[in-house]
Length: 437
Ligand code: SF4
Image (cartoon, rainbow, N blue to C red; front, top):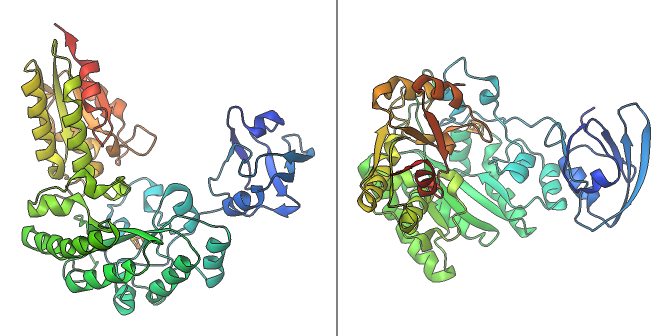
């Protein structure tokens, strides 16, 4: 009963032919649909026959003529029409292993499913896949696919992922790249383990697979206070972060000369930790790696600078902006730029220390509602409180600790404004919520 239709998109094929929520997709062209890949593959035709089981048990056989790429325009109860595959690793840096007990159950699920990579951009390690699964990616053209590489050194990868099957990553990437699958790669960098020369070697290996490997994002390991019984890991400090920036800068310069793109980019945290200058927007090109925290500061800064001209000059307001330690300076500077253009706008940027996960976690996206309520005093809050959207569960109004935006609004008796983490709507929101003089 897995292919239950949960939503019919407006003006879709499904709506036109009378498919309804609760109906079940049984077959396409006589074949059982095992998952979303089967569905996409079997739907890719101009003529198809489908079997639908209606709510009352009646089975409809429908013949459909359509555009080649058009699908039914439905959503299924299970987004991948199957249970998500969990990972077979025990990575030394796994964030899920460092979560405190008692959080919502879904946060502990370790997915490692290429279908989620295709649909939602999740990163996969390719370690829980048989050769047939890799062939299926190729057959069904799952592209691009996001791969957590960490290192191309087979022995080191086995150690880092605690998985004896993790060493064949490079052969698998070569196979995918030869088949024309686009791949985005990610490296979680652990000081003293896969950094320095190991990182250079990994990036150089991946570069050989360009353009199939489109880019590499390097993010620093995150360490919470819940690491009892786990591997001993260090964090990057100013010196070690600067060293990685330098190592990678040499490669980036070489790649820019050869192929016109830096190919590998380090996340913003490296620049903040090393106190280094943030690269220009040209360096980040289309900002494809924002989900990895690559280029967020640049895009935020550029939006603020370009939108300052749109700031209303005849309005006033008092705002409190919530953030973590790593983005504090950036937001503080942005608030000063805004106040300089209109001194009737007052913005207080409040840095929240992450007591929930531990002080080493400094990104705004992992701040919890409880930490905000404990650290921002009621009488300190302005007329409105602004929080970045990435603090909340995707498409929802819930913080990681299940506190809701509504809870926060009740606590402060103020409206909470949720802003894009790119800064796109920051000045727009200030204008919207400021008062006419
Ligand atoms: S692949 Fe590694 S980091 Fe990802 S969930 Fe599994 S153990 Fe954790």
